[in-house]
Length: 559
Image 1: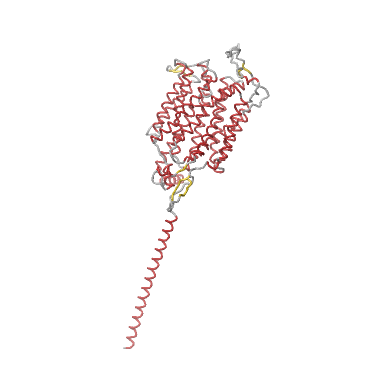
Image 2: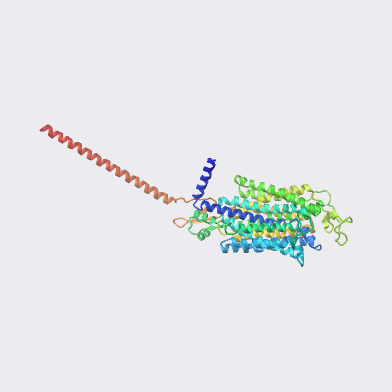
């Protein structure tokens, strides 16, 4: 116990002696970062929790709505986020604080989630109201831009990879836990139960979960809980020897080609992941002949297992990146695994899937005995000649995706944050968030346009080519995916470049060291001269005393 106290006391004293922050400030800073983690988890959950249930919920609200409209409903969320992310990021930069933008967007998130849950009792066109509710949830999740920007500002360079890894883990967990929660509430069934005049069933419960968690997140951002601390710019000022933040920003030259490359890579990676999540329910119903309830249950189970795999992967990212360069791990661990996952989703089955005959007018949804008609819908012509995707293929492909996606997304955001440097990153993070949102907008539309009309070969073939092209381009610009340099000027006016990736401390210049050495040598020589002079004077004095005693002795003898 005493040993633990000594270790803790030692760490505490080390924190107190930090020239950038005190121990108390460090605790407040990390508390604010943990709240940002929860916010990222919730925003991802708000999108994914309805993915597997949106089609049967829409079908229940409006039988005339088809899969194409389902694609628009799913795309409404990322469309709102894409449009408003740069704006909210700019708002956070302009204010110099992230609290108000986060509080306002969380309030909108709570209201929009409640609206999604009460669609059954709202008058009017319910499918349009569903799209509107999802659009507003997307607008509220634009706060991801300021959350990422704050994380970059609130972490030291040495902490950045771990912090971005954790925030990405929170985001990915939100994506994979959402369908799991939908699966967990399926026992409620699709028959509505009213409590306090509010509808509850397995579809509306997902919205109510978002409401409760949104209220908790709102409370966490109140002043007594969330205190903002920006340390990245102070670290850059110290390392670059700058007196003001503006001087530190001007001394940093960012590589914009590298930044835009990473934004495009982020788009491709998120597009592939969201496509698989969005396509999951209709794909499994078409290929495996599952019912709506079976599809929700098994997909929720599979995605929950994928979440566990993702967590294990996140734990391994740090040790792997200590052994190999982050850029190599991103390409060969992230993009390559995603590419292999797409290859496994190309059908290898010997026969086409079971055909669900919906009748001449495509309006028959149940058999004579009242059971649901299962299989690949006869309206999709490709179902009649395209081989069936096997369950084993789908599971293996999803497993590779569960490993590749967290690696790729984590390291893209880590390298992107380092490439930008310690400057305010609200707008840039808004652009990256917008790229992710654009992929989530196009993903559902891709399902509606490509999968529904052309089938699995075109769907997974096109996405596989996108991943392969991204890998090639990342290899071409590989040497540019590094942190920026700080431009310093020496005493004769020449520019010197200092890599910001090396956490420097205050060190004396070479000239200062020479001057101090000269001063030290001069002082030592002066001290030696004084000592020698004193010794000489003492010797002379001793000689004079001896001579005086000698002459006195001689005078006595002569007398």
